[in-house]
Image (cartoon, rainbow, N blue to C red):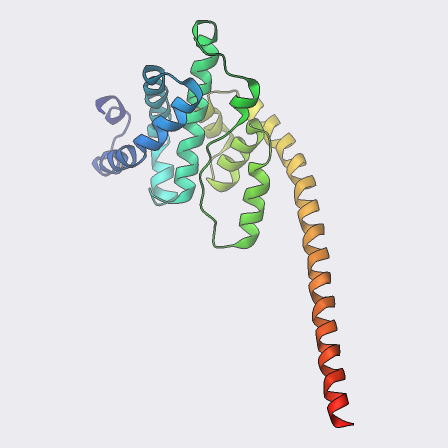
Length: 209
């Protein structure tokens, strides 16, 4: 914990970071070990991930409750990325090779948001390949800048911009389909409601004959 405290300046931040670390340690370890399948390497991934988190901690504590779903989503993204970085560096020494499909899987855990429109968008983002979904979530759900995302994910800022641009294009296609389906469902519901009203009116007319 001293390593993390050396990054944090304010006593209040250190206290909140300790709460965050204790609250998410088990989930973070599970997310890392799901990829690395090695307890020692998973702990290394946790340390690297929480260093990145400590460097951006003021933004987390200000924007979100430590225990909210957006913070949980953020923790999992950073831990998974740290674990993937370790796996790729040590790939030739690993006993178990991990398929590209397995690396693409994510452990995002996020409860439904109160706003149904936000829910639809979030589900659409999650359906994208990880390299797009993680930058979109960090940018538009957690509110980080491109530069901050580059530091958190250990990648070039130009790569973040490219993935955001390509991810947005894919997301637009998915959202257009969702909106089209919503419009069709609305029309079907309205037609069904009209039919029921007509049945009711016909019944009333027969009674009055």
